[in-house]
Image 1 (spheres, helix red, strand yellow):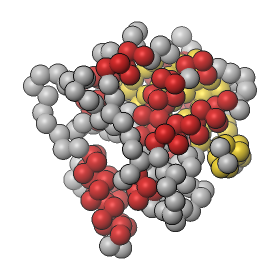
Image 2: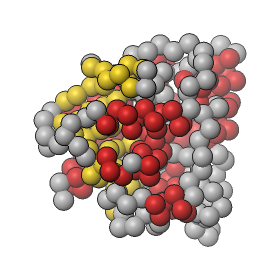
Image 3: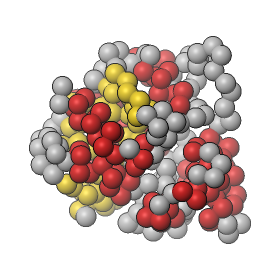
Length: 270
């Protein structure tokens, strides 16, 4: 584990392999360990740099302070990438980390060579309607709010199960490997910050502003809003490519690491 001093914070990261830099950004409840299962496949061709965002493990945050904001994490990621040499870098984000990566590409395309978004999280505003006939999905923000209530009531395990099963379906929590569960537990208090992170919805203008060559990846078994959002964004990001990882859900790189690595490597080496 190493760190860069970023906006007054020591931002931890793990680095594996050699070659062009690929910076990887985790999602909700994740940290630099999120990408462990694909470090092997991805490091064959790249120097993989997996970061932990502000207040995530290895920090054990007490949820005190008001700097857990989407804008702060975007600014931190930009400042981190500015210190990675040589540039520009390839950038990959998953879920909430995909939202961060999207915003980095929007604000600082000069820092990036290619962009990979694995089921980016967030909401679509009215300028990005979903295709007609798409089933209505309850917003994940409601699950997050419920998990926050449960944490405040002392039910940490219930909060994590509620959130995870809101994405992967009822009964999925019991199938999560012990190491992955521990990572989520280590970051559980970040839920208390995320409830007021001030994340803006994606707009049509946002999507059209992305000029970095972009690959959007979805899990073939993902349901709910996360299965729809990346497809809508892909339709409006000029020249974007898409890929589906069969028989995998939202954490597709854990469930199908070889397939995920093949898709990402093929795109980055084009």
